[in-house]
Image (cartoon, rainbow, N blue to C red):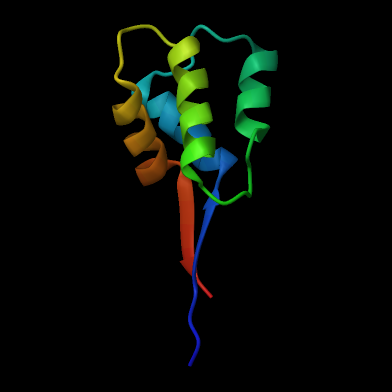
Length: 83
């Protein structure tokens, strides 16, 4: 039996993560919409997660560590399933 683990960046999960952590509060609707669509449905590569984290850092208050943001994105903003 061949089984694959599939991981995709999920805009709904990213939205919930931002609400939960009070992130992206400095961004306007256009910036937030663009952020959510950046990699929706794409594989979560290190580069993509770093770019999402940079956007969160840019549009959020507080001195957050970029690696902590990346870890949270990978844990909460990525949808996983077995195929």
